[in-house]
Length: 298
Image (cartoon, rainbow, N blue to C red; front, side):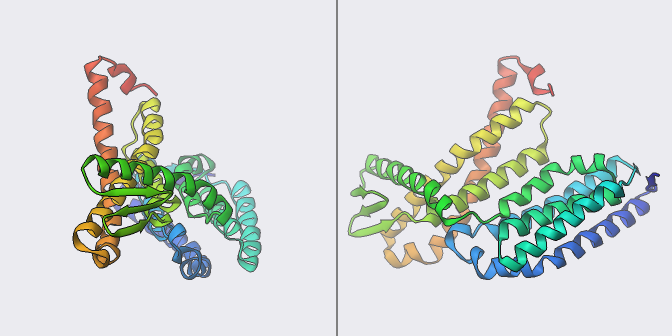
């Protein structure tokens, strides 16, 4: 059995709208889960990346669907494979939502979406959605013990780098653990400034950039994915230095007010710019050393 889509733009648009309606229905099912996450876990500094990742994930799902429909018009729906995914996802949803186990709730979303893709399109098409489905894993709230274990070394490293950078610029700064004292002010490098939330968001944005650009060279995509971690570190160091300088020159109220939140936006913009710059440098170095064949190698 095959499912054909008209080659005209009207047929593709109708199919796309119908598919979006199914996806929206699934998302409506998860409104209670997302609401609970908004008022509990996502309302904390360590997990505040959740809403950003959710918005990006929904957009990318739409982007991937439109891309697939433009390139393919014939599908072979596989209900035998799709329904087991949906039933498994439904079971995980019931257990996860009733027991407030958000890891199971998010995983249920991945299984249900995968099942619908198999039923509406095909199992082969579901494989093309692997990154879009994987992207929702970034929504999973990690246990506090895991966050503390990962965050503490990051905060110490960011504090150390910020301390040495500002000291090299002749600012009166000293460090004790994750506490920076610049002039008369003491600053605590908290999770929001150099924690798991920023790393997760930047990693998600970086991987999204890699998948949208879709370089043919596998090694190039892997290299960019690995470099996102140091890019995140550099961006966090710049943010902490910026907040320290704002506090030193403009006072504690400025450092903790609007400029503190605005620096978070600057953090992500800086990271995205750095990723694009690094990608361009890789391109130029590959061309300079005449390894263009690697640029197009799968």
